Amino acid sequence: MDNEPQSPAPTSAPAPTPTPASAPAPGPVPVAGPTAAPGPAVPGPLAAAPSAEPLAPPAKKRILIIDDEASFARMVKLNLEKTGDFDVRVENKATYAVSTAREFRPDLILLDVIMPAMDGGDVSSQIKRDRTLRDIPLIFLTATVSKREAGDVGLNSGGEFFLGKPVSVETLIHCIHERIRNTPPEVKP
Image (cartoon, rainbow, N blue to C red; front, side, top):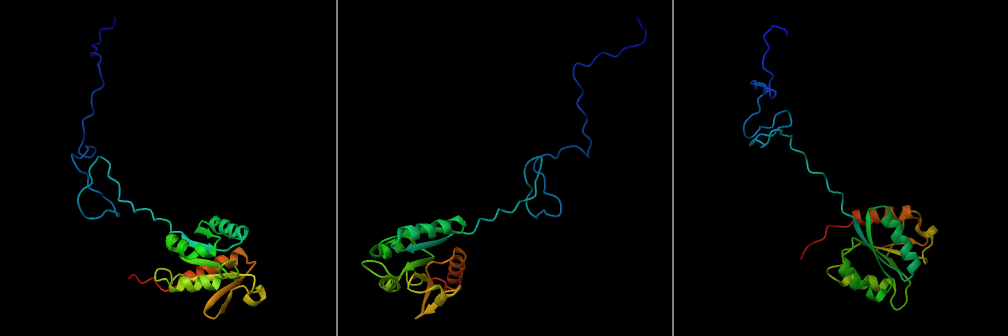
């Protein structure tokens, strides 16, 4: 055996003695750094800089399609919703158009001109007489106006806006955005 003195084996590792530089601060820890805002300290051993709330995505624009041609209306609905910018409802019966518009509260109405029981002009007149609906912009979609007459930007006639059927999705979306953008703000009663 060796005669050198042996130190007793430690039963556990000794705890490191905290130095002032590494000692955790008791209680709240102030937020430090260039992004720190003046004010009360943030509790906890690790303080993080305040983060900005994530921006909510813009609200989808609500579009009501009033058209007796169910397959055409469904195709337009699917194409608009595919963009992620629109929430679309379809009404195939012109006689229910006003009640559907009151319930849905659209930002814009796409309105067919030639429909059974009630044409688009009659629906438009009812909408314009209704205090809650009269400021909603309308786009008439009709086969009675040719693409040549309406062009790529639509046709203003008699204070109304018309697009000829068939219409490209790009043209329709452009016209929807333009009509919504040019609408005066709604006046609350």
